[in-house]
Length: 362
Image (cartoon, rainbow, N blue to C red; front, side):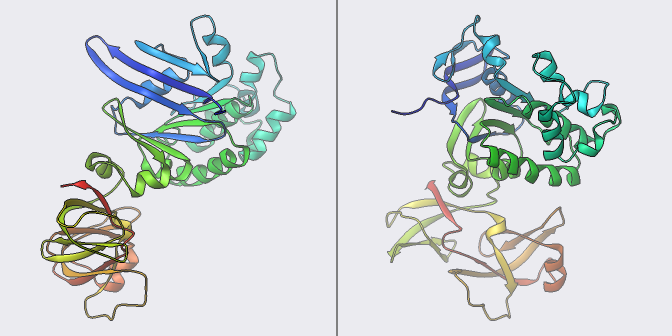
């Protein structure tokens, strides 16, 4: 017998006036998993989270908690079994320990000196701040307090609404792995909504891609990021090289695709004569000087071309190479200096047959 999802949306639609902003036939978060919902701004992510968290009632459809439909009479009781962390910490003007204990006190379950409060102060590395006023904290410290305040309640579902969006890069880089370790170790059933694909990759067991209020893809995290089902999803999750080619052969489990006169080896099945779209993430491309001897590696594709654009960024530099078609790679600033990468330089781009994937008919 299949265990029901902890929280499940069925036939949910949300409309504001004549505009339907959310249309989700089915979506559930299972016991002990982190479900990351990603999508561009305005795609309906926060609306979906509010409905899943029983903070807003859908225009149509039903929300189930452990298999039971939630109605107006039961929503408050079920909502008390959840905890939500928002983009802004929303801390009270009291000490860190008192803020962490706030939810427990509202529920008559403890105070700021309890063992549970102390445990979460320690686990989120804010114990030295226990007596400090919350209004004096940095953004990263304040969000750790908000997370401790939610987790001390031992919620059956944790809802995270863009929890890193308001943090600076160093604070985000420190908090993300710490939270990931807690969620995995404690198997906290979690729904995370974010526009940041890196956060989804770091935390999510499964990912739902929400586009214009509809789920465009729902799958295990690795499959979403390495096998997007559409070009729209591919572009959003960071696939920058998208080209059309024709399958000319199948050899030993590898598909040979001709693109702009170049032959690419792809570890995916397709019929000979079929037109296909190929997607390649920039971080899966390795660059070496055109004069260098190709090293021993598992890369099956070596394409030599000319750099047409170098765009410095953080944490990587974006390189566009004309190999008969525009191919995008990202490398470190150190690699740019060591290889002398600049416009007009001849360079070889290498990638594995498994790095590129077929999105579908061209």
